[in-house]
Length: 146
Length: 146
DNA sequence: ACATTGCTGATCAAATTAATCGAGATAGCT
DNA sequence: AGCTATCTCGATTAATTTGATCAGCAATGT
Image (cartoon, rainbow over all chains, first blue to last red; front, side, top):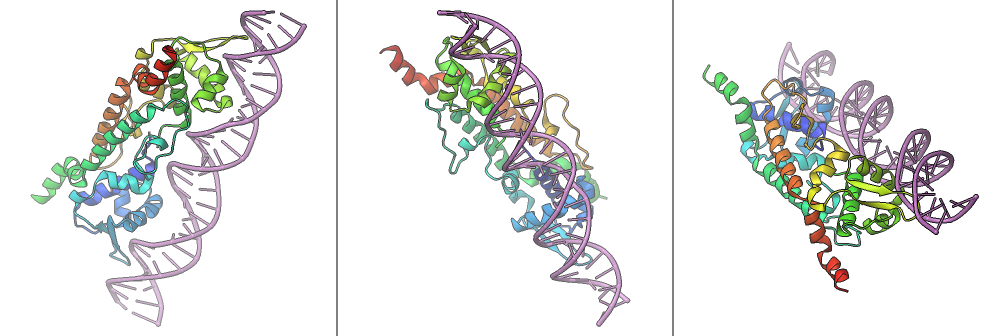
């Protein structure tokens, strides 16, 4: 239970944008489709923009669109933006892990690292292209061939 | 960063007990060797006892000892005692997952489940026998052959 | 009895999470 | 120029979780 709502919401928003691919979507629209409180999304989207994942346009007829092809955005990337290092515990991060003060060599660390690596592996190979296809494939196809 | 200190401390305490195998260790001793604040451990150990993982004896010459062979205690078990269901997000627990309200089928859920399963697999196959061997093998041998 | 140890529940401070809100900036339209 | 729809940014807040500490009680060996 370590993915925060914020991260979850960000992923959902990106999923919506990935399904619509190049479309320019208003905050309001994203919020509705992703089922995210708009006032919260209001602080999430700028963060995604800051990280370079989306672009925005202001004024009426403004909105958000992806800044990269969905195939180039990994879940891994998004999680790190909002939650920092992916690791189950501070002594098992890939960079600058916190040192363990136990007398006996802490063999737990090794297992936490296994968890970390397995997690990262999955998040790295999961792109929003795959997610969009899985989620909206049918729905998107329906629109395309309409 | 989702393993809490409490869980971490509990694992470390069990690791110390596993290295000493059948010995009866005082709270104080466990606290020192595991580098856990004794006042905190004071509330952790009873929880482990409640879950049946350790036994305790009171009075002078009291202390704690394992209630099972280290090979029969999995990391998975300990994590669940202190943190409940192992899942990165509430919509991906194995029992009674929280339903997702997104319009489009939430394909993220599938990936969170992958993370969950990979994590559980690792935690289930890691026993304290393995951890003790990895941690204290050398040190324990040293004591044994002294 | 008394010293030593575990047991229990209350309490607490700090951090994190999950929002909400209002004022400001920007761009398009008339 | 002025109006309006939209994104932007920062402050604030309530609730929850985390990480501890402590006092007092219970049991037990000497």
